[in-house]
Structures are given as C-alpha cells and as structure tokens.
Image (cartoon, rainbow, N blue to C red; front, top):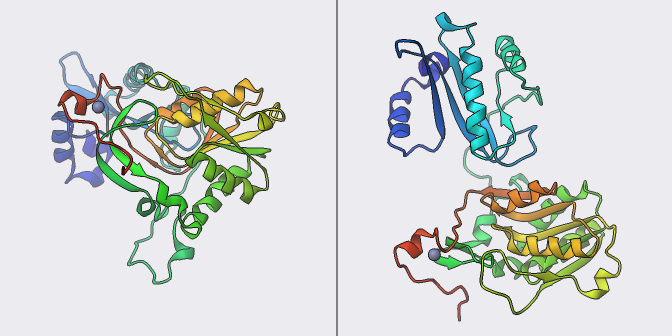
Length: 339
Ligand SMILES: [Zn+2]
C-alpha cells in the first residue's frame, strides 16, 4: 500500500519499514493500520510530530504524513476511522493541532480533508536548486543562520544546565560576543524578525541574554532592559528567579517587550525574565534566541501565547536528574567553566 501512495520510494520502502519495526526510525512516529474482518490490511495512516508547520501556531503539531485506503474499500468510512484514531493518538502525544497536506491539484484529497474537519491554511509551491560548491565571497548569499555552528562550539560530556536539567552537549557562548563582526549579521537577522512585533523594549537576563538584548535594542531603536539572577536559591529544576532592576521596573507597565537570550534550551533565564516582567505589569509579546534547542522552552511560551522567534532550531535532549541516562550510567558531571 505504501507503494501505491508513494511510487517513487520503491527502493526505500522495505528498508524504512524494517527500520520502523526495529525502532530505529523516528519518522513516522506511529503507523495505524485498518484491517477488514479477516485481518487483511485495507488502509493505513503514518503519523509524526512536527516542530514547525506552516499555518499552525504550536510547535508540537501532529502530522498526517501518509493516508491511504485501498480503492476497493473506499467510501465505507475506513479513511474517517483512520483519521479519528490518528486524532486520538495526537491528543495522547499532547498535540493541540493536527496538520496534513496534499498536492495543489489533488481535489479528491482536499475534499476528503475538508469532510473530516480540516481547514485549508496555505498553498505552497516547493522549489529545488542543486547546490554546488560555496561561492568564493559568500557573505551576501549565506542563509541567516549559516556559520552559527562555528560560533557556538559544542562540547560533549555530562552537563547541568542553569535550569537544573542535564544534557550531553554544552555550547560555549562566550566567544559569540568577543568580536562584533562575528555576531552582527545574526543580530541584524534576529532584529529583522522582531521588528514586526512593534516593541518598546528588548530585555535579556545577565549575562549573555543582556549582551544580545542590548545589541538588538540598538538595532531596533528601542529601550534596552536587563534582569539579574536572584541569589540563594535551591538547586531544583527550573527554580531560578530573576528580577528587573527598579530603574526599569518603574516604567515597565504596559510596555511591549521582547525577551531574548543567545540560546534557548529549557529557557530558564527567559522564563525567569518572563516572570520578573509579569510581576511589574509587563507581559512579553515575544521570546527570541539566536538558536532554539529542543521544545521545552518554546512549549512554555506557546502555552502562554508568547511568540517565539529564532534563526535556527535544533533537536536537543534534556533530562531531569532522575531521568538522566548519564547519571544512570554513573558518569561524573563535567564542570562548565574552564577554571
Ligand atoms: Zn545527569
């Protein structure tokens, strides 16, 4: 049936099916099969969770990657039953949106989607260009996040992040701010994304977030604020507290503010800054980072109706100390500072 739906993939279907069954394939995340009274397969649905879908608002969108019913068994509710089961699966994954797509000229599929309660969001045309070697003077032709990896040196090990969560990767961010010429293009790109939010101020937590906030505020011509970490806190997960200095707090009420950080993983500093601003009567309208790692931070903000802007998203695993597989193997914690 997969071959009927995707004839181009004839070579890869056996390999992908084997990989899915042995658990090494993460997309699709789930496959639903429809069977007749005798147990013969008559249709299927393949499902994934996508962090970004055009026309959707959340970053954990259940997605109908494939949907097929054998022609002899159509118009009997098989497709509807598959989508109903898919929606139940999606809810169980914590998704509040369910996405799908079809080709522009596939009116039959479009009608089937509408009949099941999907609303059409956007029409997209895909383009393709074969990329040769990078041009010699590449600056103008580079994407907005290209080169960011070189500025954020990744270390492998066993780390405790500010949030108290554990991770196996650490990004050294200090070099980002050492040379303005390195970071300027990314500041300009992120400022460009923030401009449409009509901001009064840009706020970042000391230290890295505030450095970036000041550069972006300057690019946008808005006020610059910072928050500072409050001392004497317990070592739990996501318990760090920040405050807005009095001089900013006195004029914070009612302002449209962006909160920024160099990198958002769990978003501890951004969450703390969000809470500090809310205390002063300011509700941030957007949270931004040069790079977003994983979905823990973005989920926090999307649940609160705060937009998230970034130049690059990457998958990233974080664990509570109790869940951490590195702790489970007894691996010592790596110290973060070079001292
Ligand atoms: Zn650990």
